[in-house]
Amino acid sequence: MKIICFGDSLTFGYQVSREEKWHMIAEKKTGIQLINRGVSGDTTAGMQNRIQKQVFNTKPDGVILMGGYNDIFFNHSWEPAAQNMIAMVDQSKANGLQVFVAIPPPIHLPVTFKEGGALVDFEKSALMIEAYCQWLRDFTRSFRMPDLDFRAGIDWNDKALYLDGIHQSVAGHQRMAERVITFLKNNRVGSVNRPAIE
Image (cartoon, rainbow, N blue to C red; front, side):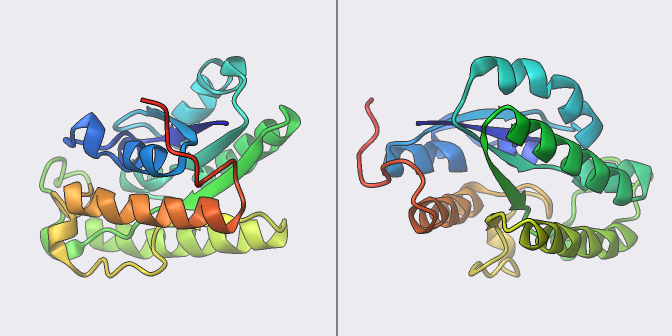
């Protein structure tokens, strides 16, 4: 089984080695092929522009969609991200894919990174992020879709799980991988007990 992990830097794994990224850890534990198509700095509009080539044209079995934070940071609104996510979900279903919408980890304000800080009000962004993540939950529940909630069961108050308050450290990726493994098992996706072929 092949699933595309599609998103921004939280999917890509900013400044974390390939073997330590959440999708690689989960792939080895489940035997499900998880292909990373995250692009650092991407918005949901950018994701929409590349979803045909990087997802649909590769004929996967499913897709994990996770994006929206960059929309909020730089466009100061979450509503366009919501509309783009709806469009990508609809397009993915139309292409016969299993669709999993991911709810990203929260940002950690005490250590939020300073890069681009003059352009981003992280405190206001944090409030919008909470509203957006609640919308994601409501959206998936309305359509009876399982959501891959990276907030569930993880104490993100531990700053050791972050590199900079937004991007996850190696320890953070381990926690995300554990969440993915549990999610795939609970939703009976593929054969989660078969080890990956090296």
